[in-house]
Length: 219
Image (cartoon, rainbow, N blue to C red):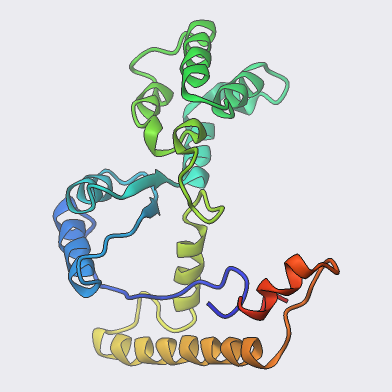
């Protein structure tokens, strides 16, 4: 990467549908292209088919559910979250931000008791998936500071400048090549800046200056 938090495009695919079978095929193709090297961590929305495919194809990959999508569904499914002056938001985030698993499970029991959350509630179903999104279960797992699929969404927005729903398959291939050329051009520009300019330092310290000689430019 040539600059701070610049994303890198490894590949794209066209899927006829978003079924577990389609995602399984996609991930297996990914493994083949990456010589069997699976990602250490992957962040997606709450799609069940994708989740099952990841479990089957990437059994050792940590799968995290997008925090933005969960918060969006939380507001939709839990009416108490809409009450700004209520206690539920405060109690919910106290549980969500607990520091360890034992404390998390204790706070969850208190939350269920106080707000009568049973197995039919959406939040209870999300509790069953807690290892995929609750912070206490992610301590020690590297995610580069990311908890949502925002980077993926920004890549989708990037392609919106080249293709749309009316783009034919033939034109899609041509536009995709143009999109890749644009990404390569920007990567080359950033690489050039990193090689020919000095990183901007925030403090006058040798501890900062020395790594700046080796890491890519960030300012």
